[in-house]
Image 1 (cartoon, rainbow, N blue to C red):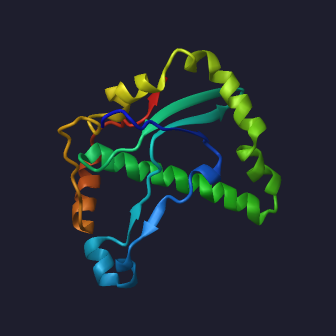
Image 2: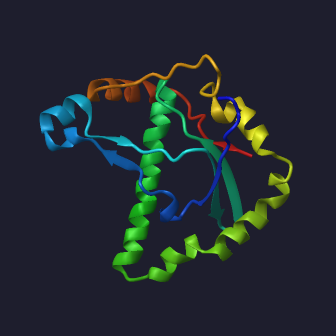
Amino acid sequence: RLGRLQHLRLANYEDTVTLLPFFAPKLTLLSPIMAASMGGGNLYKHCGMRLRFKRNDKDIKHTIVYAKDHADEDAYSNEIEEAVESGKTLWNALTFMITQDYQKVLEFHSCEEYEERIESVKYELEKITLDDLYQDKKIVGNILDPDYKPVMMLGFKDRASRYANSLTKSDTREVVV
């Protein structure tokens, strides 16, 4: 919140290494009753700003995302959607592993692939500083405001209610630059 620590992570959309772990189980997972009332785990969020590259046909697009807490329904819904997307990418990687196409898994994590994707958006990114990103409310919301108070959800009922309420809201989590 004081702007002293800023972090930018780079991630290829298809790179499973940068996604893991995305779930951290709680001890309540051992008891179905406790898991139902208090949740069986938490979705894990990596720290800092994430610059993610995604190849579309011949084009490479990038998005910039900052992990937020559950202060509103949109943030919680976006976290669920992000976990689903991460799950799809993980499933694709597992499919490559099952079919023994290890080269495909390694390809998305290679230095060469990252360099190519960075080079393709270099011109757009040269105009932006890390300070700019951390000051952009479209990306970080109000989570870095000095008077910000996080909201904690304790149980499944609270989480399910928030998610249901968020389904009618628009997705504003990812900002395409």
